[in-house]
Image (cartoon, rainbow, N blue to C red; front, side, top):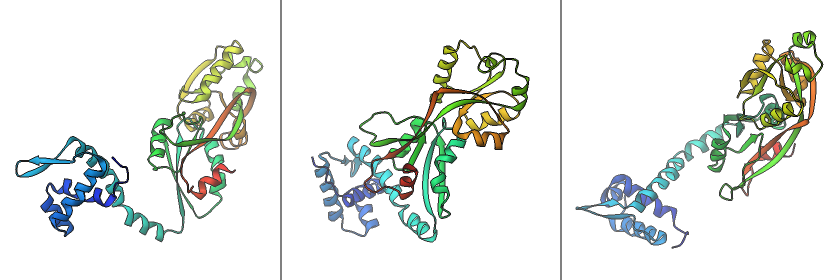
Length: 292
């Protein structure tokens, strides 16, 4: 078997499978039945398996044929979108970039990581938030140009992706003003009594925070756990509790959410990665994000 099969042959097979017969496929393609049959046979020859079998007076797909049809459906359904995609791209002066944002990534830091491309007025940003594994699958299928995450991609030779550390930040605790004023204990002992908000275990930093509590012998008064970092900060701003965050967003927390600095936990670092697929030609905006 050889992998150098012809996509035109695959297209003829796909039409035959969709039409249900060689004669209908020949009519649709305006070609001779013998030509269609010969092209399908060439595909079977290159793959090393029969794709059709006799069925009464007609033909039916073999198991190998069903497998080939599933892949061909994906290939040609995408191919049918090509003219529209090219037309839309020609009409729009903007450069599109599709970015996957891991749901464990703090939103304020996400904005900072994208700052190099947001300065460009000719950029159209398409952001998809989701769980880490689903985003990796979309990247492998080239539905995304890049993923921003709080962890590198797992080592998997079948994924063909690269992880690059963009930045890191030490952690600190932040609080609504009333808790800073009313706390009777110094930091970090105050975390025994103050209401605490934490990210859920889906965030890689949560495990490190739990270890930090254990190291200092603190049993925190946890009143809320959040998957969404922006939601956590919104509840904190309403006075629900204190929370940990990267020091690189301290200015934003103070100006946007009215938070006050409570104390450092500098032994904890939060890491941020860009994950991209293995391509010989990289999206120019992806390069801008990585080189910041």
